[in-house]
Amino acid sequence: MRPAHLSVVSAESPEAAKWPTVELRGVSKTFVSRSTSVDVLSGVSFSLQSGEFLAVVGPSGSGKSTVLNLLAGLDHPSAGEVMCQGRRIEAVNTEIGYLTQHDSLLPWRTVEENIGVPLEIRAVDRAERKSRIRDIIAQVGLEGFARHYPNQLSGGMRKRAMLARTLIYDPPILLMDEPFGPLDAQLKLVLQADLLKLWSARRKTVVFVTHDIVEAITLADRVLVFSTRPSRIKLDEPIAIPRPREVHEVRFHPAFEEHYRRLWAALDPPSRRPS
Amino acid sequence: MTTEAISQAPNVSATPSPPNRVWLYRTLLVAAVLIGWQAASGTLLDPFWISSPTAVARTLLLWTADGQLEYHLFVTFKETFAGFVIGAVAGVLFALAIGTSDIAHRTVDPFVTAVYGVPKVALAPLFIMWFGIGLAPKIVLAAISVFFLVFFSTLRGVREVDRKMVDALRTMGANKLAVQRMVIFPAALPWLFTGLKLGLPYGFVGAVAAEMMASSAGIGYLTQNAAGQLDTAGVFAALFALMLVTTLLNEALGRLESFMFRWR
Image (tube, helix red, strand yellow):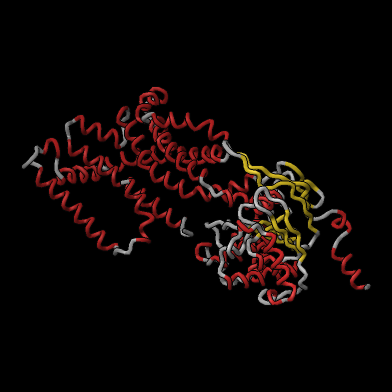
């Protein structure tokens, strides 16, 4: 009992315990264009503790990416509040690392120059930049490709480079938008395993958007299922599979089937995506 | 010439046909034109109107020998170069300033387009009135010609910057200036180069046009002077020298471009 108690306290500073790391309170979002308005989110509330790994699944167009954009401060809610570490997000949120679905590497910079961008922004001196870039390149498994330009890399390597660029400035919160979406199944497993390894080493708070239920169960502590537009949270499912997890064995765990069934049932039948 | 220079650059690596053969065909084409010209001169048409390649070559040799060609070319080059630098720098800065603000862009756009529509050469008399007959009006006319091409091209590049890259840098904590420096400027650079390559010949056009109206030196003066003496060979010789210079400079810009954009 004692060690368990200790581990809970040491993981969180009293400051962090007071507020959830991330919190949405009754958030609604309506996109208005000249002729139409689209209600994307309606009354979405959830909160995340520090170090928690949350997966968000839902039919396409259900506002999963919108939630990430709100958390990143790139967009603002039409109603409700988006909080990060007890503060309302007003401008671009620099507490987060945002790994988008789209390739946002700068094509005119080599891998190492791309990964160094956040450090350049923070005016970290050249020597330290170099050593931190070398470390992170080794961690994400891109050794030997430091001097390559993005268009000389495969899709998986570009994802690794983007992950490295996100991790190098050590943001406490990671937002990931279908980061492994377009990759083949095998590579996906490898990257998922790498992500879990990095996450357990650094214990970041993660919001991971995916349309792949298996991926959500494999990675997350908790899975939120969004309904079709305007989205609400249909299901908040804690995943009862112990860590550390092996990505290719999670699906054989006794609890997996039950989770899968419930998540699948919560997704709206007409918008189901074959995965 | 400009269109060739622009469409050629991306093809260099893509076309598999051997470059040697292309050069052979080019040489043959030039030879055919020159021989045809020479043959027509004095037989089909009076050399008084069309001169002949040998007469043009003779004039060029003569002008080279007495240093005249070098002197006038250098004057025109100097005017164009100064105008090119001023126009290009102003074009890029203006495009960066306007392009990143939607309101500013939409406010200024119709006016810039309207002014762009005015033939720049028509401004030459005005500049001569304002700045006299020295180097200044030529530089200004060259600068204005270059400015619009570089401005429009760079603006297009700035407007087409991938928002995803900008947002990615903003979440990493980049301020406006860092975004300009690390994303927008490099992303617009290929467009800027297209503007430079298009603008260079027009810079020469501006300078030469102003020279033709009022000056005592430069290729424009040389052309005008030769025409005034009914010396067809002299007109062709001056224009040929100008063509050679613009082609070489464009080639140099193309080389610089493929070096700078080796990441593509």
